Length: 273
Image (tube, rainbow, N blue to C red; front, side, top):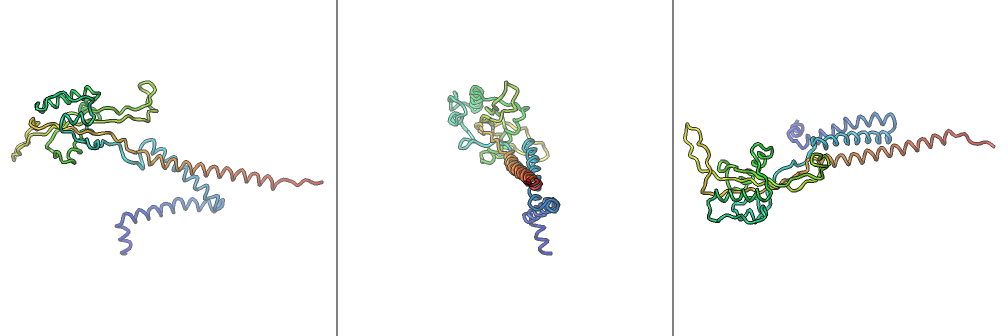
C-alpha cells in the first residue's frame, strides 16, 4: 500500500510507468500479432515501419500548425547592456538613432521626450497605435522588463508610446506573395515609459486619475524580437521518423526482391541431357 501511494504521489514515476504501459500495450500488441503471422524479424520491421510512418505524418501536422510538442514561442527580449535607456544621450549611444538628439541637457523632460520621438521617427522607426495588434504585447513586455529591473514598480508608471523597426520577411515574390519568406530581418521595439505622480488613496472614494510626473525623465525599454524555436522539436522528430520509415521501406523492398529471386530459383526445372 505504501509503495502504491508513493507511485501515486510521484509524477515522475507515474509518467515513466504510463509510457512503459502505453508502449507495451499499443506497440507490443501490434508486434505480437505481426510476429505470430509473418515471423518475428519481419513482423518487427513492418511494425517499426508503421510506427515511424505514423510519427512522421503526425509531426508534419505539428510542424505545419505549430501544435503538439512545441519549443519556445516568439517573445521580446531586452537588448543586453542597453535594455533601459534613461537619458537622451543613451538613446544615441545604444545605436537606436544614427545622430545625436538635438535637445538641451537642461530642457524640460517633456521637451526631451518630444525630441526623442522626433528623432526616432526620422530614423525609420514606426509609431504604433493602441489599436495595433503588437502594441499590447510590446507594452506588456516593456513593463515586465522595467519592473524586473527594479527601476519602477507596478502602478508607478504608464506606457506612453511604442515604436518598432525592422522585422521584414524575405524572400518575397512581388509585394504580396510571401509563402517562401522564411528569413527575417532583426525586429526591434522601443517602449516609452513615463513615471506617474504619487496618489493618495482615500477610503470610500475612487482612485484619482493617473497623471504623468513632469519632474522625472521618461524611460525607454529597448528590446529585440526573439523568434524562438516553436516548430523545431516537431521538425526534428519528423526528420528522424522519416529516416527510419524510409530505411524500413528500403529493407522491406530489398527483402521482397530477394524472396522473388529465391522463389524463382527454387521453381526452376533442371535441364536434362
